[in-house]
Image (cartoon, rainbow, N blue to C red; front, side, top):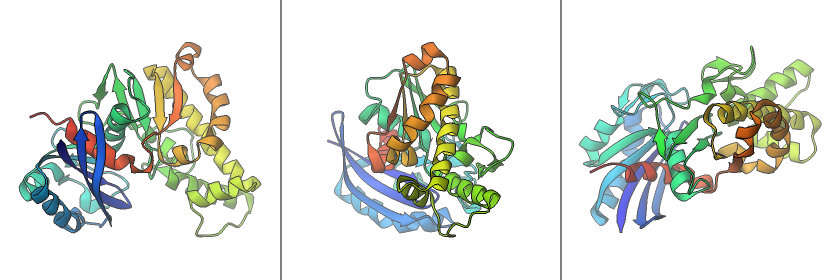
Length: 308
């Protein structure tokens, strides 16, 4: 058996997990989660006792770190992710883990890490060309090209959430009208408030993306229109990726995965209209197979890729 530790750094929560590898099969043995603090030091301090305990009980030498970008994965630095407080910006997390836990670690963009996880353990098994999309708090793409992860010059390839889809719209990745603004949990929530104000509709201040989908499923015309707008914009994003990379599979997690049945009929006409016929014909669009725990699998998948 091989054992690895994974750190999943998110804007809302951070988790640490212990994974057991038996051949090509991964089992999560332990997992602990804390609310993300403004400071990385205070956040990791909350997770530290669990890491120390697992190190004593298991032969763990490597740790993977999954975090939203922008990152400098080559140097192990969290640069300036928009979904993390400024206290995290510039944090040398690989160096921190080496000094405090004695683990050899590797930092990777969360979309890239999830791409590796879905490629090794999920919906992309057996593919040579696969794209994974986060569609959670933010929107990013992880690229498996010709059978290996493509992360770019300094780890920032696949930041599809930053591209502009419209002159104006909900803000995502610090840009109004961006792909992340229309196609993420926060973006969908903000889109609902923007469109409600435009149409003179009052909606509850506690409305979230989850609320949007619950009410859309109940037949609410306004919230159905929000889902439709997000899905159509996601269709535009998928079309760009299909045209650029000619993948076998595009796998998406988060909001898309949980609402696959609502999204697909709405986005397929856009993909059929906007993408190259020959490329679209060989590409499947699938929900993430690993499910809600993809972040745990992702960080451990990155640990597995660390060379001796």
